[in-house]
Length: 240
Image 1 (cartoon, helix red, strand yellow):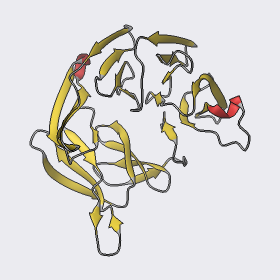
Image 2 (spheres, rainbow, N blue to C red):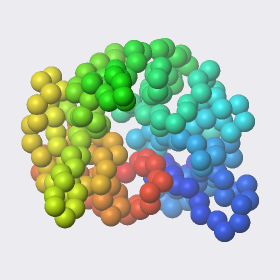
Image 3 (cartoon, rainbow, N blue to C red):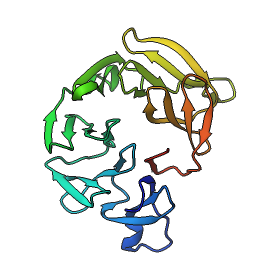
């Protein structure tokens, strides 16, 4: 690999050929290549520095974590399903969500289970949601919030970023990104401006959001920096 991966996307082809069924990686220099064992219909995760990629192997369905700098890959006895895995900020650990979530320690090659993430009640409502953050030293921090607060937890686990939808007589609007104090469950403030989705926390003071393309949103100032990346089925890696 000549440089870290900036993003990955699903290719669009008129003909159904094997090359069109693989994820395409794009480096920060603009180089492009396909992952031969990663089907574009499956989940895929990139580390924030763009040097690691995680996906289910197209044949065995087991989790593969590839080190793109070293040109090596490890396979783990875990089968990611529909929820996208998420790397820790330093890329050393990987959360595999689902009914029985697990933490993969990429460096040590170990897997350990964590408590279930949600507590559902009939007929399908969620009373609370448990979020998992990677604290310093690899410890796991769990935060339980009301089920209507669905969003992304900051690296410290102290803040939740969510995009509230408000229904008006004419349309549904998003006033901005709402920040919630996870210790109290109370709203702190709203960062104004249209946002379709919160993709992830880039740091404790920056978010990656999607609105007419992908942008870095400064949590403190509200300033936005376009990344020049667009598309619905895109996984963002190193943004610089």
